[in-house]
Image (cartoon, rainbow over all chains, first blue to last red; front, top):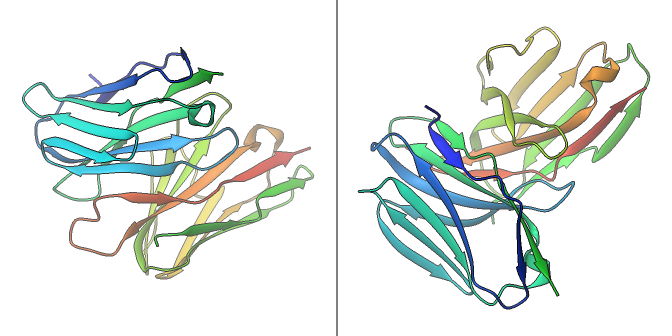
Length: 111
Length: 117
């Protein structure tokens, strides 16, 4: 079983829609959860970073961690064409430099 | 804050030549830097983890003699692709962890696109 599983999509939504991106993970010891956005031919950009369970909001983006289900989500409200990119979830254990990345979900927001 | 740069952004070289890619953390000290490779429409593939002042740790299947990594300072790591061949053509991305006890996140550079003719 992979440490992190992410549906690769592609996901296509109309402008203004609410987008839900999800990942599941296998090890309950994971404590640090990240979402990155990667535009085509660019390096990933850190969007959201959460420690342990709960929600974190930043503008139109909300990151949610459910440790009991080992499930993390990124919600994008009022999606814009500029949100079209690949979104990667990432997880770090609290016992050293072990990072695990999802395969990325490709999102297209149609004007 | 937490800006990582890479140079060059794009390089084209002839088969058999060596190519050096630099990765710099501009506004923080990075104890650990990571080198990734990414093929079109695929996810990141970790090649090696580099700690300042020590030898890099390579992932299984990555040739350490072909992909030379040097992490001489807390703000600079270099990846040298030696005797490059067309199959080495790819997008190479570095990232850096902020200095700290848990190094809980990574900040990525913009990537270097390598084309070997």
